[in-house]
Length: 344
Image (tube, rainbow, N blue to C red; front, side, top):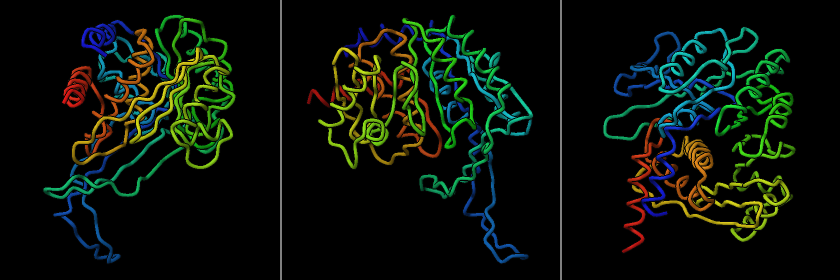
């Protein structure tokens, strides 16, 4: 991608309106100072002293964070939180972000706020080290009245946004935002010029005719493959799926990069960018999702969208101890460095 195309694509971001439908959670980081370790008199166990607590939107909220960093004009989170302290924190964090509109983000006593609590060990001179995460989730089916409200939002926003991202983060079907009722609403709302990009932790099998993002294992499960897949087989499977589904298919490959396939038969592999020092892969996939959606809404070609996605992933993995984001300025810098390296 030449600089002129980069500026043309990213220059459109401040005019975009994008909806993010999915499971928003609260990422709560507990920073533990190892220098202040104690032993409990009552139990004899080591005490972790938390010296700082910071919270930010996670899961679908991480995608939203990246859209904010990209400078998207208006972002509509479509989801829910509980009437609890975590829900208050999540709404406050979302409301503080530029361009974020909470008209379609509901608070309900029928759900608890999805929360990832992440203890971080902080030691002078060393990168933060994350301990076992403490999760709070909903284990019962989402009530139909909550899903009905989400469906109404999907229908309303499909008529006014340039792109829609659908993020299904829960491990048990129909316990989150993207229930079977919401999928039916997405199927009805999809129109020809609306770029819809979907990602699901469980499976995208049976989803509406939207653009699909998945990893290689998820692709294998959808297409009947088994074991580790080489690049030729991934390309072939992605191409077949894109043709049958009628939309683009994106397959993330971790350190091997990303593959994109289109219904017209194009299939392209873009390698990952070079790693510079320590990395933290948390949030890289969400940065890829946000970058692909913004690029798709801005009419980027398939190769251009993939190149921007790899730049976004590279920026994020080099941010340690947090779920990072990638701005246009950072994307520009990463791509320039990559092109200089390739010219040597």
